Image (tube, rainbow, N blue to C red):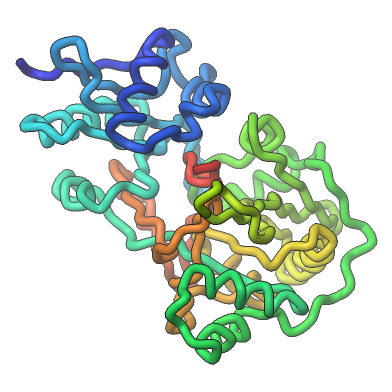
Length: 378
C-alpha cells in the first residue's frame, strides 16, 4: 500500500507523539511539553489555522513519517518573502522509507515558501538534500568563552565528557577559550526590547543582512512568548540606534544511575545585533557582568555573519574550530553529551540573486541557533 501524505490536523497530536516516541526519541520534549509543540508548529499568522505546520505520512492508518516546519518571513537586504525552517524529520525504517522521505519533503518545498532551510538534518538525509538541489553547510559557526575564575570548573566539566584526556590537554583547551579580562559595563544598559526597534534599528539591519525578519513581532514571539525558556534581553543605546543581545541561562545536567545530576551553568547567547563595533564591546561587557552574577561557567553562540563574528572575537569569544580540540566542547547540556559541536544545514529554493550562505568573514547571512527549533530542551 502506498503512503498517504498530508498536513497534520490538531487531532493528530497524540498519534504523532506515539510515533515520535517509538521511532525517534523517547519522552522527547514535544511529548513532555505539548505547549512547546503548539508554540512551534501553530504560527497561524503564517500558516493555515486548521493544521499544524507538520507533514505526516500514513500507511494502513498508522503514522510512518513526519516532517515539521516553522514558517517565517525571509529578508534579503530589505526584500521580504515567506520562508520555512525544516526540522524533526522522522521516517519509519521500512521498505518505503525513501519514498516517504521524498513525499514529506515535497510537502514543505512549495509556494509561497521561497526559501526552505533544513537545520540539523540527520546525516542520512544530506545526500538526498543535495540530490534535490540543496546547498549544504557542514555546521553553524560556534563561538565559546570561559569566564575568568571558572577555569577549574570548565576543566572538571570537560573531564566528565572526556575522562581519557590527561590534565595538560584539558587545561590547554580551557586556557585557550578563557577571557583575559572583563571590562566595565555600560551604565546605560537596558533589559527591554526598544519601542523604536522597528522604526530605527531593524530597517538598517534588514538592508545589510540576509535571514529571518527580526522585527519586534518576531523577537517578541521567539523570546518573550517562549513557553519554556526565560530569555534575557540586554540593550545598549548608541545615538538613535540600540544594540541588542539576547541570552538564557542553562543548567548543565549529566546522566547518572539515580537520574540527571546538576553539574554547572552556562550562558547561551541566541541573538547578537550590535549597532557598531564599539557598541558590540559595550553589549558584551554588560553580558559578562550578568553572566558572572548568574554564577555561570562561560557562554557560547552559534551564528552566521562575518562582521558580527569578528565583533564576538574582539569581545572575548573564540571560534571553536580555531583550536585543535575546540569542536570537542559539548553543545548539548541537558543531558551533557559527548558529540562534536556541529549543526549541519541545508538551503533549498534560493533565488539566483540571493548570495549563498557561508562561514566566510564577508558573509552577510545572519542566522543563529535560535532559528527553527534548535535552541530548545532535549
